[in-house]
Image (tube, rainbow, N blue to C red; front, top):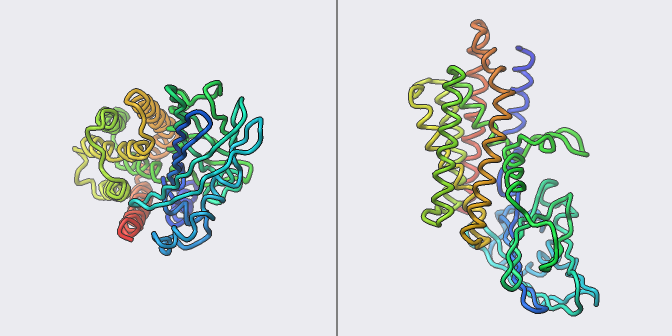
Length: 365
């Protein structure tokens, strides 16, 4: 048990600096087609754009983006044009802008020929951002609308009403499982073992469990988090509340530090389910904000949010099956257990505060 705890400590120490959460997980692209013309809008986090351009994020301002728009377009999508039976489509010329932390690139492709229109993305193939980076695509052609995903496993997008592979409810559920770090592929891939992109979610959950309690109490805490997500789902689906990402992302990090501090002090032990519910609201808004840029219909938004949040909750349950017995063993060891619990909670507190400061400074820059 002690050896395992030391291993966990080493993993957490290594996680604080290199772990980069949501910004490098996913980008968003809208494609609106009419006849043989396709208008596209690509949204990626400014940190992701800086990685694509191989430059310091702090130096990527509006003037620099304007000067390097063509280069960014080439590296993200334009170098592999949309292909038809008659050959490549032509781009009219990219324009780029920065809003908050989001970089948006817009362009228009004019095509000739019939049949499927296939499109590959250099940014996926070359993995400049992250090996797990994926593009969530909203495709609107005439009166039809569909969602699909482009990632390292499916690097080609097929445009057209006859194209298959629409991103449905089950896929959104799995995205939630992957996002929280509960999927095997998040821990090990062809390059070997790694820390999942959802390490911040895992540390939040671990901090809640470290606070102790009976199995029923822990289930109640997890249920409180689920309730928070569900409220967020309802509000976001109807567009009633949508706070800016610049506020939500630092709050997510701060919630990790707060729950870790509670695990150390035990000052709010009777109210932990209320705390979990409140922070469930905050965590849920993170994904709601991410999807807002796609301008989904209410039905599509509800499906995406519900499926994704369900996946997050299923992922949490899977992680709890592993973590709860280990934490209970530590609590039962009166000799070294308290040191293990408080030591882990202290490291999680440091990680949360580091992410909080990092995200606040990033939002202010």
